[in-house]
Image (cartoon, rainbow, N blue to C red; front, side, top):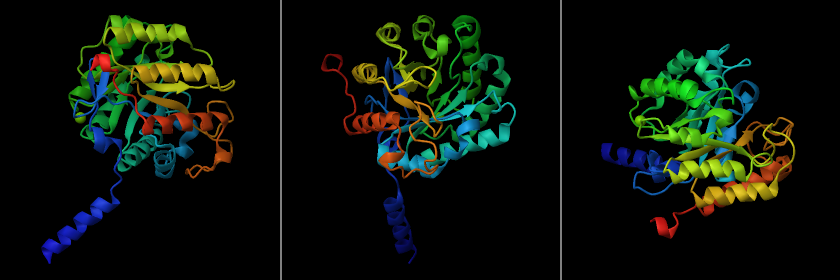
Length: 328
Ligand code: MG
């Protein structure tokens, strides 16, 4: 009786599990410029960034995550905790609770998830960031699904050597005392575009990648040239936020430029999260005002950006980038 009950529970667990990318690749590990899975395979993920938690929190729910997994074939999501402007600094418990809801949903769905400290002045909030990431490391450090993003977008007035790198080193030390191995993403000045500067003076840690943010309507070959400087130094980049539109989140979908960026990310096997899962009336949103907060979006609820990005994300899952033969 005992044996058959155990067997029944085992079968039940198998049939109700939601196999996804984390079961396939395990904890992500920087390996030169590459991001690799536990078998050493190159991993290139495609998915969605949520919107600032203090303004887009109604979408921070498991149903929306499950829909992105099932309909979009998303393999990674980004939980975006707003820090200033009515975010975590003013409402730490409620904003943190939204992040935990989204991270737990991603883990249940077997998706990768980025915990993003969404701040333009994080080096002025070092103590708060340390205490938050210590708590996240205790809670999630053994989960292969979780990545920590320490500083969304430093401004162009911050410096790498004087502001961003010292901040990142302090937060990384605090995380590593608790979680020795999950991937950590670090931004760079000029809204996480100065990856060439970070690449010239990298952080000493064996699982750090540098975020590269672009908006296809605004950023073109000049920014890819900066990215190439880093990649050719064997420095790993991670596109934790990108848009099809202008850098302010509005304008139009820049189709031709988006295609060029997608080809670049495919060539270098970069992972990427599109900005953003939101109903706000602007070009970057994937769904229209009034669309359900819990997924199940018919095509008529998608914005132009939503339709374009859904195709790119699905294509990535169906045909993930592979290493060029010459580099194998
Ligand atoms: Mg760990």
